[in-house]
Length: 429
Image (tube, one colour):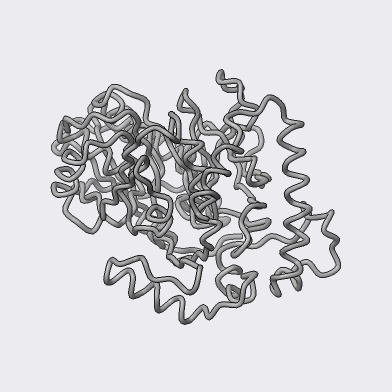
C-alpha cells in the first residue's frame, strides 16, 4: 500500500505551475477540506477556532511551537499517548534504532536548535505520500530508473525503509559517526544523489572529496552563501536545497537552484518584518498533513521574497534566501537609552565578510548585549577590519559592543550549524 501511495503522489505532483490561479484553486479546495476534517477530529483546534467558520480559515488565530507542544495530545487528530511516544523517541535517540512506532504512527524529535524540541507524528500513509512528493521534487529522473540516494541525517526515518525498492535505494549515514567514516561509506556506496547538511557538504569540499554524484542537495541547515560558493566550486555543480522543518516541507529548488515554496501542499502567508525589503515570517497552513495538523503556524524563520520571477517559468512563489531565525537577531542597546534595537542576521553576515577578503568560514555569536564573539577561518588573519560593524552600529544608532576574535570551534555533527546566533534571551517590547 505504501509504495502505491508513493507512486500515486509522485505522478500527481506537478513539476511546474503555469498560473497563480491554478495554485490558488488547489489551495482553496485543500484548505476547505482540511479545516472541516481538523475541526471534527482535533479537540484543540475545535476550541481554538470557536466562533470562526471554516471558510474564514485565513483568519484563524495563529499558533507557534510553544502552543503546539503545550496542547500536543489534543492537537492530534488521533488519540495517542504523547508521554509514551516521548519515551519511545527518547529511546530511539539513545539506541539509534528509529524503527519502533505506535501502531501505524512514527514519532520523531526536531533537533531543538531553538531551545525547545518539537515532536512530529506521521502515519504510514502520510509518510508514503511525503516520499512521493519529495521524489517528484528532487529525483531529476524517472521513478522507474535506478537511483541510489544518500541521506546524511541526525536521525533515520521509517519513511525511507518503507518506500525503498530494488530501483530506488536509500542509504542512511548517521551524523553521530565520525565524518571520516561517513565520507568513506559514501564513496563506497557510489551514490547518484546525496542529501545532507551544508556543514557536511562543506566538509567534503574542504577535504577535496573525489565524490561524483548527479545531484547534491542541502538540507536541515541554512545554506550560507560562503558555503555554497565552496561546495559548488569543488563539485562543479549547483547545490540544490530542501527547506524543511518539523512543521513541514516548505520549499525546494528548481533546475536553476531557486527555492520555490511548496504551495501545492500548503498556504504560506506573510507576517512582514520589512515589507519594502521583502523580509517576512512565514505562516504555514499544510492541507495535506492529517495526523498532526499545522494550520496558521508562525515560524521563527525570516525569509526574503524574490523580487523577480524565476526563469524556470514556475508560478510558485520563490524566495531569495532564508535569512535566519528570529532567535538569531542580535539585540543591541540603543544610544537613546530607550531599550534595544534588533539587528537582523543579514547585517551581521555582511559585516563579517568585510573583516577580511580571505575569510573561508565564520561564526558570529552574541554572548550578551555588550559582547560579540567572532570565529574565523583561516586562523591567523592579519589586518582585520571592523569597519562593517561600525557602519551597522552607526546606522542602527546603537551602543558599540565589544568584539572578540576566538578560535573557530564548529565541527559538523548532530549539532546544527548556525553561523549567526544569539546565546542569550531578553524580553523586548
